[in-house]
Length: 233
Length: 233
DNA sequence: GTCTATACTAGGATAGAC
DNA sequence: GTCTATCCTAGTATAGAC
Image: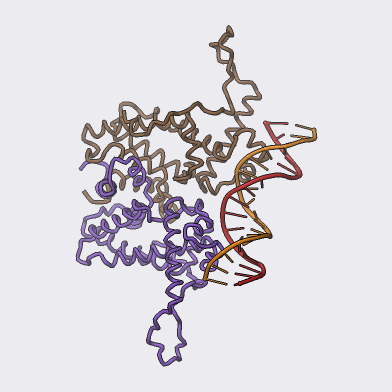
């Protein structure tokens, strides 16, 4: 467990989620039977998915600051005011996209075969991030934007997913250090951050911009430099 | 020479430099004697240096988008309108800071002993960048901001310095690959970009934020992971 | 070349009808 | 919950006096 490497913030309950699963009174006789979402709710959820898709793309293309709500509304094909019925602010819009990304990451990590060697798992996770980035689906966190950060650390779902991911990766890192595959001089946090950083590595887009290499080659090169190092063995 | 790795843009002559060295008519009998700058010019240059210092700091703290001209003016202690007498736009303000950074880089590279092994030179250059970043003096290029990019590629001084740096580092990289120190499977461009990326590596600030390591330790760790790789030899 | 005061615009957010 | 129309702040840039 390396969850201690993340400052555990007292995550206050989330303000409100726009699309809730229908909550029945626990006194109801059918309380244990999840009710199928109504047609309207399905439409709503689909609309929000579409919004999040657009936000995700814009976030990866231009980053949070440069993305405008007008643009989001236009691309979704909806009025700006309607967006604000779904999400209370631009920050929450971005947060929703990030939350979905986190949930996808959690889901992907679960797919990795448990029997694989720790290093193999770590490489798989890294490749997954790089692939998203190369496909223009990895949101660009403009690092030190304060208003977005504030929203994010207040988002329990986001924080929980992030910590879950960090714990999983952290365990793999420690296992890989224990069995001698990853160098132990580097603290596990450093390794973790180094892997995370592949999700926003400018080298990926620079190499892509040269047009000389395809995505497979680029991922291979960055993986090599990251795991094997620049120096020859 | 790897200058071909950078798209050689036809760099049009710079619009105008706010502080020019006094230009005498070439017909003048003292044309070859550089005239000492007048007191007023020295004051002007000093003022502009102060402005650039502030811009540089803000650029590294919050990036281009989040930096406001009001803030710059306030921190310099001058009226906003006065700033615009020195620099025609916010973009030019940032460009000036970046140009100075480039010139410093060029100067630093020249200081590196020519007799050192290529890899040693590359490590020195990398450490220089990381040190600036850790000290909060490395401007944060918000990557894909279009208006700033446009100004930059129109700035001959900037482009020339960037190409000069790339050539120098490129030569060292190729030398290091030739003598077997740096792995040759990786194209020189990839190595070059990988080193450049240390100037904006989020791992540096993340590790700094933990408060568990001092700058020397952080630089050592990142250098290790970059050159030696995460895997144990 | 410095100031104060102001013009102008982009962009986040809301009002209020349907 | 969607729309049109509008508000309002922040932020770039400029006018014009000294």
